Image 1: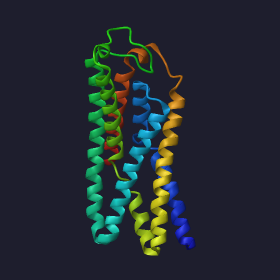
Image 2 (image 1 turned 90 degrees about the horizontal axis):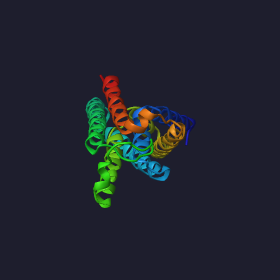
Image 3 (image 1 turned 135 degrees about the vertical axis):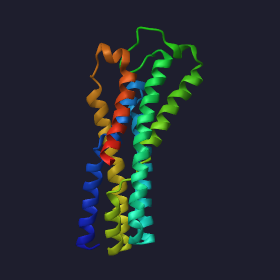
Image 4 (image 1 turned 30 degrees about the vertical axis):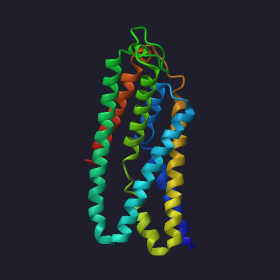
Length: 225
């Protein structure tokens, strides 16, 4: 691989890591993991799956432009804008729905503490309670992953002009750097909030988590406006 190719790979790694620090890539997992009492292993697994979906969409978008030619770049940019807009609204909808779900259930035992009021979930069959928790995890995984990275496109275009090997190297570097960074930052987020407790969070932790996720989605919409 040429020096230009190596420089492009290094740029890809830096871009992926910096891009992953944006809260919409990891904060929702930290919030829901705390609210639902997920184990670190489950949290990391769902984060990794979401990251895999994110990089797959990003690489597919870049490769589609390579195949179609530079004339398709503007159209693909428009597609990305629409996907980013949809992703932002999906985060908003998920956050509001999660808060609403908490209010309808009347509270339950979770990692922020124990609600001192009626636990509606205890009257549901264990299998149903598990399915509801699984649904929130799988839905969040899809919502976060459904947002390709537009910053990868010029890197893929540049790599395609150099060689097929450089194109593969850039794609692999982006995938590993993004997924690895998402997992690491999420794990650090869990560790950093592990001692974050208060009577307010004990009672309203899930409602706060849902509201923060909705605000994260709103921030994505404002940045894309």
